[in-house]
Length: 162
Image (cartoon, rainbow, N blue to C red):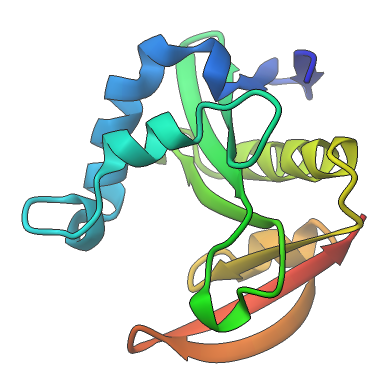
């Protein structure tokens, strides 16, 4: 996917595969944002997941957002996400904007870039499960698909036709 310059804030979105040097920083962000999963004692391995997202042409594919000050966000497009909905693919996942950069439209730009990546790969629909990003998905034209309890937590699943 070519570099995409988006908006007045000069956010550039590039494949994570092209920037292995940011993996240690993103690992720290994942561990801080999702401590019960990626932190000490959690079952996740942030560095492993980020390395898994470091593909350029096949799922899973990670995208990273850069501003003039450096890395500001990340997201991934995965083949599968929620076991109860394994028949659906692909999934927008691992969306994270640095807390100091939130509220500036970077999450929407990352989501739009994932949608474009999905189109380029030939998908006609994309899905996302979230407990925190409903307003972002709605602003970006996504539609409520399902409400479920996932691992004891309320979760909503959104979809978007591409």
